[in-house]
Length: 106
Image (tube, rainbow, N blue to C red; front, side, top):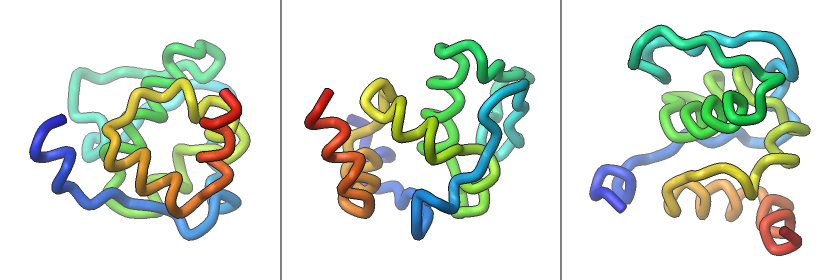
């Protein structure tokens, strides 16, 4: 793990219910979250969905970034499939124990 990932402060929502982002269609993330080449994420493609969720969770600068782009139902469904730095996974699971339970059941 990089020192950056270990030291970074990650944005977290107060509640998973705040995550009301899209569940289908195409999404283009803002540059402050996805600064690479322009990429449109197709949420019907599981690989695209996972990649987008990983980027949003790692790079969100404020809870509003999370509310806008993540959906609680999809997050719960795919939590164990996301490749995340351990500090961010730990922070989310500490705030939302149901995600820990999801991970334990997987």
